[in-house]
Image 1 (cartoon, helix red, strand yellow):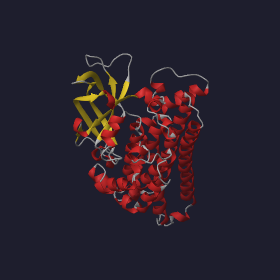
Image 2 (cartoon, rainbow, N blue to C red):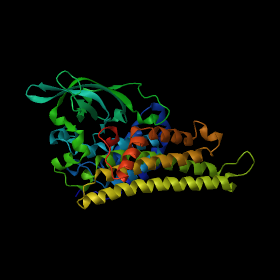
Image 3 (cartoon, rainbow, N blue to C red):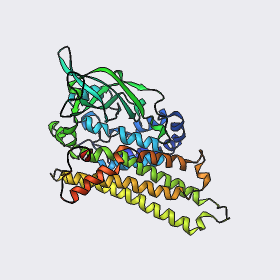
Image 4 (tube, rainbow, N blue to C red):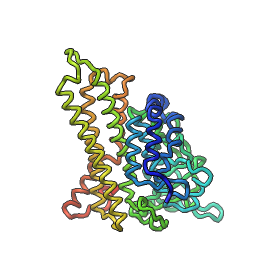
Amino acid sequence: MTGYQSGAVLAAIEDRADELAACGPANEALGQLDDQAAKVLRDSGMMRLLQPARYGGFEAHPREFAETVMRIAALDGATGWVAGIVGVHPWELAMADPRVQEEVWGTDPDTWIASPYAPMGVLTPSTDGDEPGYTLRGHWQFSSGTDHCDWIFLGAMLGDESGRPAQPPTMMHVVLPRSDYTIVPDSWDVVGLRGTGSKDILVEDAFIPAYRTLEYTKVAEGVAAREAGLTDTGYHVPFSCVFPLGITSAVIGICEGALAHHAQWQAGRTLISGTQSKDDPYALYALSEAAADIAASRAALLDNVTRMYDAVAAGHTPTFAERAAGRRTQVQAAWRAVRALDEVVARSGGNAMRMDNPIQRFWRDAHTGLAHAIHVPGPTFHAAGLTTLGLEPPPGPLRSMI
């Protein structure tokens, strides 16, 4: 038990909602989170929601994590995106060697951890004195919120003595301190989610002690959580449910924020015909239909993680087919929400596209979030379709992130 009262972080966000929303333009102009936006997240305890209690974390239900990310993203897309991605990393670090947990959180439990997990580097076996480990080098993209983080998770392939990826392929997650990697300036110039500061990362021959690595397959299959002796149910929910949760929650929250801005805009808008939008039945129909679809996306995502959590709490280990169905739900929820958003933005009029109107920023952020690899529907829907037929997908891409 952590003593944490469910909903406390969300309440703290609500208390400073206006402040967080006001940071949106500054985040975009800076190309990373404004210090004030980061401070609000820190003060609220957002990044501690999935953190282990022994390091000041709340071990909250992943549903609460998703609901909080959605609310933040509805206020500002970039801040919600960083909350969703950076906020999930403590969940995995809880499975890591106690030594690296102490290094990260021992003196400051509010230390943030960046990523990405894409295996864009190679680990070559090495030693540093008597310490076994690896030498890592690589170049990664899309490290969201990285300027406000002091450690990072990076994906890498296990290599052989020559530095080439070993066979059979083994993917690793590697934990590094800020001193061991370089954030590439001016490497995040994009159309949406500009305020996330999702910059490139370079690593040149950094020594990685073996205890700062986790084998991805063990994390994905739930072995890492069992080996770490974790007892909280949340840590045994599949990685393929929890990791995408922050990303998809952010996209749905962004759509909720855009819908709210659209409704506010329409309430006082007069069309070129002289008719007020509130008297236009077609505009009201589109608004209601979009609101229903975005609400359905929210409900589907939250129901999915709750069902998965309840199954695990009852002692059930989700099967591949169940995980595939869960990923199908996540992906479809994101696409449904953004499609609905498009319908109302197309009816917001030309003035909604002016840079001082927040509707266009939320619209750009939503589409950029939908472009994340986690939301690519093809392989996930293919795999889920095969399992619906009672068939197992072959090894390879169809099983990725499931």
